[in-house]
Amino acid sequence: MLNLNAELPVTGINSAQTTHFMQRGIIVHDLLKWEEFEKKYVEQQQFLKKTFSLTDYDTDKDLAILKETAKLLKESNAVIDDSYFIRKRMDGGDKLLIEGGDGAMLDIDNGAYPYIYSYSTSITGTSNGLCIAPSTIDINIGVIKAYTTRIGEGPFLTEIKEEVLQEEEFKESGGKIRYGWMDMCSLRHAQRVNGYQVLAVTGLEVLSQFHRIKILRSYKVNGKKETSYTSHMSKDPNTIECDYKLFNGWKVDISKVKSFRELPDNARRYVRYIEANLKAPVAWLVIGDEIINITDN
Image (cartoon, rainbow, N blue to C red; front, side):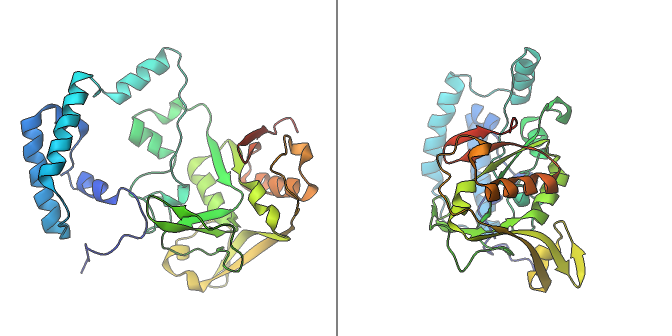
């Protein structure tokens, strides 16, 4: 039997998406008709309490805040058809920069289910979230870390347990960020789903502390080699063997580097390996707060 009260694997907007897909959600436009909204809101709270045994709602307090919010939205004409607004601006010549908020492996359809978020974090989210046609996207940039991080539960094949990159609290969930080596299999999957045309690599300076650096280049699942993400990773990670590509570290501070040529040879080899495997050029490195354009290097 499905346990609706079970703790969800990761943080996210799971509860909001649950009511959305059960056709019991509330949208911002509902706030413009307060009496109808109030009735719908009370009914939703009753539904959530009954379905999920939730008891921490203060309906009266919430409604007081929402009523003031509704007033501000109505007075400022802030509720619009975002799809029409965006398309009109684009047709007028404006450029639109869309940033994905979470990693591709957290995508509800194409990620490491069930350890995912409850929405699309891949390129399809631009169509779902903004209602713009995929054909309007001129360039698709993949932003990847030079290593891997995960928040919350779930299998993490490349997790670094013997050496801690840094202790960091994730304020939204209260949990710790887990760190691991770059997982090229998951990145190939993300590339296949999203079709990155160019790449930006962040956090290369974090790896400066290591004498030896690894990249997961393939899995072995039940004796069979896999070079891309497979659902076995989430379902039965204990049956998977990891094959790593080893790199010599650089063990020097690169936080002040201003160009690709200034990087140590081993750091440059690391970046070129990423390019070769994802079949897309690395156009930028983000080292600390510095963005380095390496297209001319």
